[in-house]
Image (cartoon, rainbow, N blue to C red; front, side):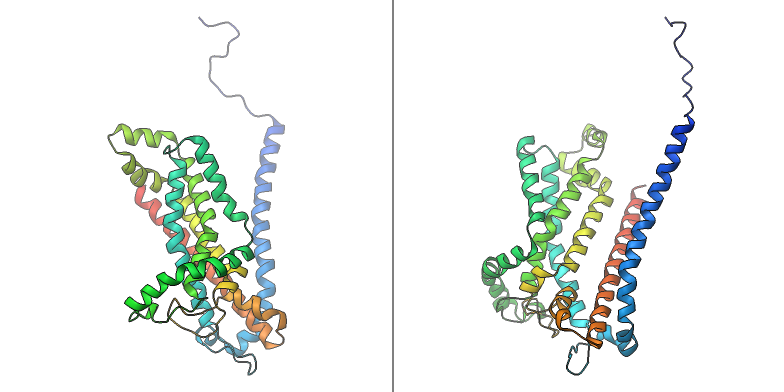
Length: 318
C-alpha cells in the first residue's frame, strides 16, 4: 500500500545552488592543490638546476660517465655514485619487496586474530619512526658483524664472480643495501596492506565460490587487483632508498672509486652531497648540484617506469 504523500517516482531531487557552488569550489580547490604540488617541485628543481649550470657547461654528459672525483684538480665525475645509488637501492628492493608483500598479505588476511594483527601492524609501522642515524649506528655495531660470516662464505666459495670478488672488510655496498631494505620495509608493507585491505570483499567471495583455493585467490585475484597500489608503495620505498643520506653514509664506506663487488666500499649521490657540501666551494658546489639534479632525474625516471608498468598490468586484466 502506498501512502498519498509518499514519493514513488524515484526521481532524484536536483541540487540546490549552494551545493553546486560548493561542488565547483571543491573542484577548483583540488586543482589548486595539484598545481601547488607542481609549483613546489619547480621551486625545488629550478634552484638546483640553476646552480648546476657551471658544472654542466664544464663537464657536459661526461660527468655521468666519468669516475674521477678530485676537488683539488676540479675534476668531477658521478658515475661511481650513480652506480652506488642504483645498486644499493636494488639490493634494498630485492630484500624488502618479498618481505614487505608477504607481511602485507599476512596482516590483511585472516591468518591470525584481529588483536594480534593490529599489534603487529603497529610494530611494523613503528620501524618508520626510528631515526636514520639510529639505523646507521645499529648497522655499524650489529648488522655488519652479523653479515660478515655470510659475506665471507660468498667470497670464499663464489669469489670468482665479480659481485663477490672483494673480501668483506666492514662497510660496503651490501650492508648499506640491507639497512636500506629495513628502512623502506614499513613503507612497502603499509601501502601494500592498505591496498589489499581496501579491495571489495566480493572479490574474495566470488573467487572462493568458484572453487579457487585461498592461495590461488590471493595470488591470482587479490594481488593483481591491488597491483597499482603495491607498485606505488614499492616506488615510494625505492625513492626513499635512493635519497637516504645518514644511514647510507655511515654504512656504505664513502669511497668514490668504482668497484663492481658488492662487498667493497662505495658511495651514493646523497652520501656524497652530505659529506662534501659543508666544505665545498666554487665549481665543487656546482658539481654537487649537478649530482643532485641527476638524482632528481633518476627519481623521475623511476616514477615514469612505475606508471608504465601499472598501465601494462591494467591493460592485461581489462
